[in-house]
Image (cartoon, rainbow, N blue to C red):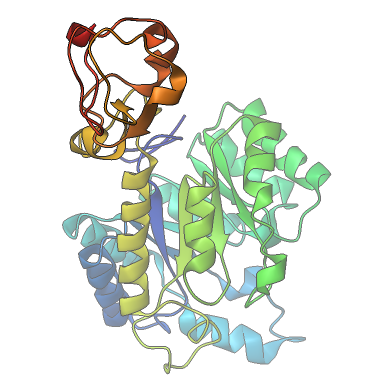
Length: 333
């Protein structure tokens, strides 16, 4: 079992729906707050950002353009705290993805309820180890990875008794639908005996909905307020309407799961007599006749003797006349 804030992540519980804000705020604190507010209003359980110090990703010498872009899109510690507090006010879980030790330390200082390990950091054992030591619940994305690499990360979390779960993920942006490979959700769940979620980088909602039907306990989807804004992830992200529809559709699918049936459902009960059949006289039958199978048929409604009783009726003697089309009753014999 994994607990994030007040939410329990496991099969049978509501899917934990994460709006991946990432860097779609473009470094604008007010835009980030608006994303938090809107994500909460449309039903997301959590909003996830990326905590980035540019020096933990790129060299200012060899990758100056990317270094400068990341610098522009980054929030400092005070801004992270402001976003965390605003998320609490909006009743939505706030967490983030660190890209190195410095960013992980920032999140640790904020005492957030969860940390996301990005696919690109799965082999960064030092980062995972340091987070695992804090016992902060981890959501570990598995894109780009072999099973051996995933198992190594899992073993680190388990060695430090750190709560964690995995997200099946294809880290190509966008993911070709034929490479979504949703069968990996149940494979990872069975292999590691944990609840598994899905980080969706496909276009549209269909793959996330299929993942829920296949048992995904977490759905993470990139989220934007406007696909036309500046930024590398905007166009492949779900906009407000798309994400709101995703939430509604997931909640509808959850209602359809129900539980193993032991009898007719409440809505079915009135259809039992309408759709089932009764043993009925195939022709006019006279008093004193011994019943043969050729004299009988099965017709609706199912208010009389059910068809499975026919062998118990054969050979019985009628004590009254029965018109063709009349359902038979035991008191007629």
